[in-house]
Image 1 (cartoon, rainbow, N blue to C red):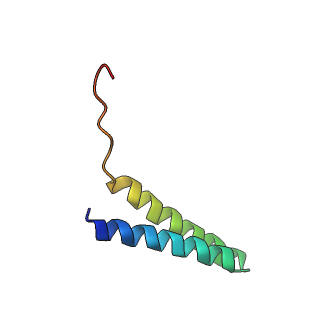
Image 2: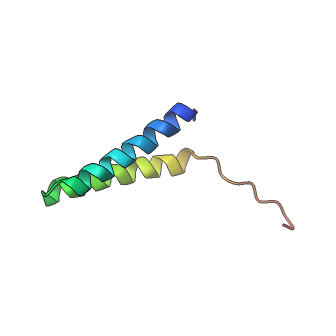
Length: 56
């Protein structure tokens, strides 16, 4: 994943959470929150995993 991809997914998650906070409609709030969760999940899927060394 490029740094641009990471920046995009991070920005979109933040925007969706902000939209969820601003809206008064409960359905829209839930949808925005779910979208933010999806962006966060995608980030977690493609983020490099830390390397664990034996004996550390």
